[in-house]
Amino acid sequence: MTNLVSLGDLTDEPVRPEPTVTITDTARERARVLLDQKGMPEGALRVFVVGGGCSGYQYGMALAEQAESGDVVFEDGGVRVVVDEESIQYLSGAEIDFVDDIMKSGFTIFNPNAVKGCACGSSFQTADGSGTARACH
Image 1 (cartoon, helix red, strand yellow):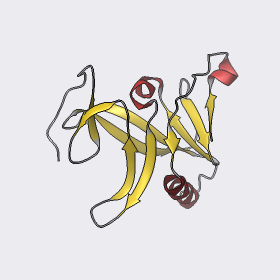
Image 2 (cartoon, helix red, strand yellow):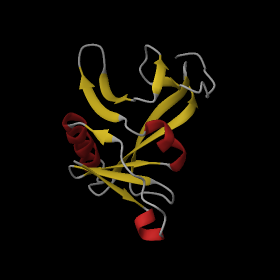
Image 3 (cartoon, one colour):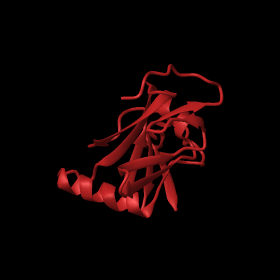
Image 4 (cartoon, one colour):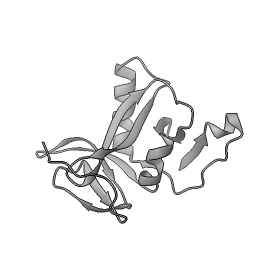
């Protein structure tokens, strides 16, 4: 079960209701390994959305030592996932997975908000068509 924690718990901002960003067992284990390797056992997996990509928006991920003001923090199985205020609108209900097969190895996001994506799997478009598409690299 995913627990939703918000910096709002510390600053009187409202806690956002679920649906939340979830993380699969495989992705959770991989995130734990990465955080431990980087000496960040209390850190988090930061997931964000930026404009660009061949469909209009593009996913990004990084390791974060701590949450920043305005971040929404989800904790699932001892792994924290942080999402900034702007990105959460595009990621609500999304699932983070980790795949390791002959075609691809890395984190993948399954996003119910995406109505169109491209073959690279890291770019998407929402129903409102916002975002500026760029060529795939």
